[in-house]
Structures are given as structure tokens and as C-alpha cells.
Amino acid sequence: MPTIIFTNPPFAGVGDGRVTQEETLRRFLVGHRWAVGSNGKYGPTKDLIGEGAPPELLFVERCIDWLAPGGRLGIVLPKSFLDTATYRPGREIIFSSCCLRAVITLHKNTFQPHTGVRTCLLIVEKLKAGEQVGGDYPIFMAISRKVGQDSEGVPILKRDPTGTLLDDLDEDLSDISARFEDFRSGSLKPSGYVFSTSRSALDEELRINPQLFLPHLNETLENIERIDSLPGWSAVTMGQIAKDIKIFKGPRFKSENLIVEHPEDAVNLERYYTPSSMLQDKSDSVKYLDVSRVNASQAAVIKAIRVKKGDIVITRSGSIGRIAYVTARFDGAIVSDDLIRVRTEDLDLQHYLFAYLQSQSAQDQMLRNEYGAIQQHLEPIHVRNLLVPWPENRSDVADMIAAGRRLVEAREAMDARNTEASAALGSGIKALVEAAKLATHAGDQTS
Image 1 (cartoon, rainbow, N blue to C red):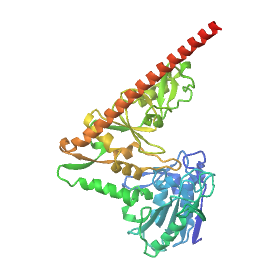
Image 2: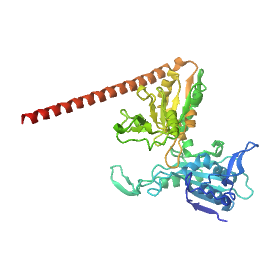
Image 3: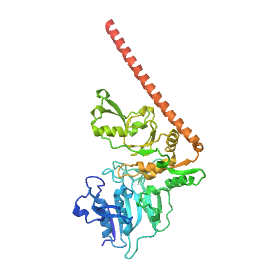
Image 4: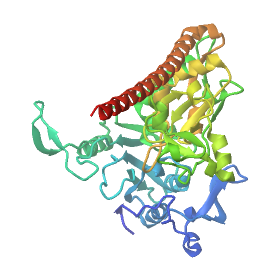
């Protein structure tokens, strides 16, 4: 039996590369569907995973099976292994027979230009013969923020204080390696992106993404939680701040057959707002749809993804956590499902949340929960679970409500000014074109 395994298995995730052969799945615990049983514990059932298992999930189980007691495994995995439900069985396998020694999330360019999958490195040590699962222990965590190359694989070199290029790659993995040795010797000095947590700090889903444990993000969360101890104040989740609040994303909208390049060609034209167009003053990147072409299922989706004046929308992929307010100009607009909606009829609460969601306190909480193997994502559940300071007496947040209201009023005024400017510019250009035509016509007659 090997005492050291170091591997980078093939990734498939939720793609076509999943292992679906029943005879293969049956040989693995993670090839079965896992659920909470009648005993209240999460574990494998008799049913196989109908859609198949990612091969990397099978690799984790088999590598641990092969390891000799006390042996070590270093394995490169998709970053989503760290915190998504799909890979939870793999995390359960690790903690049932091993100690997790290190989790390092790798820079997005680490394996570029060959793949854009975000990856991580786990270092695992199998329990020795007779050693029992349980007890607390420290886990090294690090986030690599530079890998010495760009997305095309072109080297990025360090510069000295004068800006002169040096011969060394601008990467931090060497430092992370050295800091891991410090951790092993008990002399690690934690910093913003290299630190340790403990086994007991993990939640029941065994999420091990270092981002969940970043010291400065957790400090934000702890500060919000402290507010709960103040007389007359609570730190409540956004999903529970009001009975009528709704936090959701729309269904996936397939619009390819509806998009028109030339708006004048459409029979029934509507604008389709992407996240970027919602955040632009003039919505330059808006798409145009001919909704006369919709089928029944598309009509139902369009109805579900229309926004209402007063909705707050949050970008949920890529650059997550950017905030926009649905002004009168966008009332009833068709808006991408890539925006999470926060909806309440309470105007004061609308204005307060619009201001709060743009604060560092809310942004840090959203960053703490982003996930994704290729592009970072945020889900409505993460927004519903954001902690929000909320008083028993609304007068205590009157200034913040007023600030949010003024911000909304400014957005409404900006929309109105943009509309006026566009109309004035359009009519002005039209008048100039007509004048030029008349002048040309008069010149032709004179000649």
C-alpha cells in the first residue's frame, strides 16, 4: 500500500464526463446517493446516483482506500469540491478516515491556457491503525492570489521598487509552501490569506473553503453578531427581516431565438437587460428581443423574470455582489436570471437594504459565501442568510433609511436626465440632418 499519493485526476463536475456505469458506481460509497437517514445521520443509500458521479469524486475515495495507515494524499480537485452539495460525500469520506491537513485554493490562471476550472489542493493524512476518528485539530488554509502567469500562460515577473523587471516569477505558492512548513512546526504566523482553522469550526456540511474562514471576513460577521447584544437591536437574517420579503432568482431564460440585431425588424420589441446593462447609466449593453416569437414556456419564464419598481437586484455570477435598484424606467422590464431579486413593499426597508447591501459589512458576507469551479457564484440562500442590523425602533435607523431614499431619488433623477438628454440629442441630430438635406437640395437647384 502506498504511503504517499500525489495526483491530479481528470475533472468532469456536472458535465458529460460523469461516470454512469452502474457496475462501477456500485463499487464506491460516493457512487450511491447520500441522504439523511432515519437515524438522523448523513450517509450513502442503496440507490446509485442516477446522473452519474464526477470521476474526481471516485478518485478521492479510491486514493484513501489505497493509502497505507498514516499515509498522505496530495490531490488537486475542482474548487467546488470544498463547499458544494455535489461533493459533500467526498468530504464525508475524508473526515471519516483521515485528518485534513491543508486546503489551498489555487489562482484561476494556475492551469491556463489549458483549462479555466478553478482548482484547489488538499493534503490529507490517513489515520494510523487503531487511531480513532474524532477530536479537534488545526487545518492549514491558504488562498493563492498570484501564480506567475496570465490566462494565456505568459510569465509574469516580479518588479523591484523602481519598477524594473526581475528574473523571478511573481507567484506566492513558494511562500505558501514555506508557511505550511511553519504550520507543521507550530510556528505559523497567520496573515490575511494564510492562516489556520480547526476541525471543530467546520459546519455540518463540512464546508472547507478557506474563504469561509478568512480572518477579515469573519471579523465582519462577528462584528455584526455583536450588535445583537445591544439593547433594542437584533442581528437578523435578511430572509427574516420582514414577513413579505422575497429573495429569489428567476428561472433560466433561453432567448437565442428571440434576439434581434436590428430593433426595427422586430414585430413586438422589448429590451432584455443583462446584469451589466442594469448597472450602466444608459444600459448600453442591453439586448433586443422580438417577443412575438415566444413559445408558451418562454412566455412563462419572461413573466417570472420581469422586475418591479422597488426591487433590489444583486449580481450573482462573475463579479458578485454588485447592487442596482429597479427605478421606474425598469418597472416590468425583462431582466436576466443572473440577478438575484430582493423584493418588499416596505419602502423604508427597501431604502435601508439598498444602502446596507452596498456596505462593506454586506459585501464581506457575500464574498464569504461565493463558490464555483469556473466562475464565482452567489445563490439566493446566501443573500437570505446575510446578517442585517435591525432595531426595534425604526427611528434608530432613520438616517440610514433617508440616505438610501436619497440614493434612490438620485437614480430616478439620473434616469430622467438620461432620457431627456437622449431625446434632445436625437431630435437635435434629426434637425441637423434635415437642415443638411435642405441645404444640399438648395445647392443642387442653384447649380
